[in-house]
Image 1 (cartoon, rainbow, N blue to C red):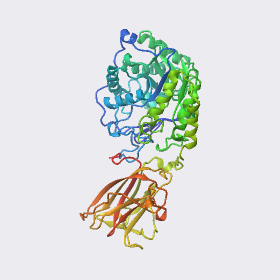
Image 2 (cartoon, one colour):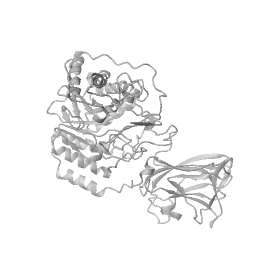
Image 3 (cartoon, rainbow, N blue to C red):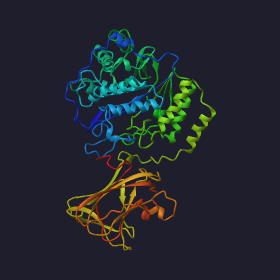
Image 4 (tube, helix red, strand yellow):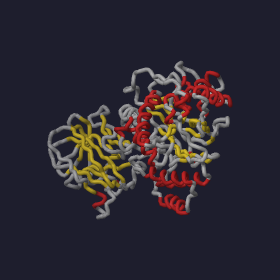
Length: 558
């Protein structure tokens, strides 16, 4: 695992799928020392509900590490480099410390027909005060409060543990620098391994445990993070857990990287590689795209408009599993979420509900189900994701910065100011104390600046873009945004659709910032010079020093 800036990235050589941790620093963390509650009473454990052998269960991986805006949203301290492939529709209210946000997530799990949330637990015994580990403890009490509210209404998801074993890396498991990874063949290593599991089930009251046959569920991530392991690793956990929790043994689900035989076997990577079908357990996912995370070279798995997810469900249903695990509810860095997002709305929640009902009813998929999956695959639009170099920045920028001369230089990051267009001439300038570019006379009495959005970032997507630019408010007529649109009224007018809100210039002779949403943006290079949009100055010259295009709503990075 390497640390660069504010992000920690873990990688396993044997897998194409990896996690990313993005931390904005320790600001805002509670300063009180972390204390782990004592073991629950035998009476509380005895009252824990359990799924029986004849019940069919749907689970999903629940990432609760998000806190707007400083944790797991951006890849830099300035909040310019968006790290997410998918985005929460209400990002400003997202926080693991918020009972209301966690309750809404649990309500949506229920709406999707999901019974169990497997919390991605990134804790390490005696290390919880570390800023990058603190959320793992601090996020559980608000979740418990949310679950209690839902239980009072009649129904709530149950909670299992996904043991993120990357905490077995020495830099996380030990305070002493230079320690190697935890060796689970040693007494010290087994103790660390067990106490991680023990602490989770002390933090989570038994009334919310997810149990199979009376045994709380633990799914293990990969073994590669440990220096070693053996059969005694799991036997030690069984023995100690039974002593601490009134005779109960955990129900452990482990993938093929673990040499011992656990209670069930599945693996990680279904969102990328396709369904993993074990004995009574299946793991599936909707697709995979970690391209916003810089430094990644993982292949992507296109969602195919839900076709990949539909087909994965149908293949899983054929083996009649006891449990289907969906990978994931909300790992938005890697684009594997099925929660409500800006990109997909509640489409995957509704889709999951459909197949969850089939599983629990014990029904075989019908011919219509298979036909719908095939139709989805055949009719899926092209993804246009060939240029991963732009995907790590959902905000594309053009700016002018000083370079020791009076004129400055262009800094193009996926957004290009097109030179040589007959009616779109420009030149470097210095206006209002800033280096910038300014329009200059061309073949038209009006002044234009033409911009090209990098095709791999956004080509013919027919969605909504957010445009923001800084201009010098000199005296003159309004400035108009004209963009290549999906309108079908006129072959020419469609390419130069005018935004209904022109920018009125007041003559303040100050730099100002303006934002416009561009619904139905096509960006198919159909304007002069192959441009996707242009700025029109109806009268007088126009000076600008920054232009940004984003797929996100205005204000996301504020």
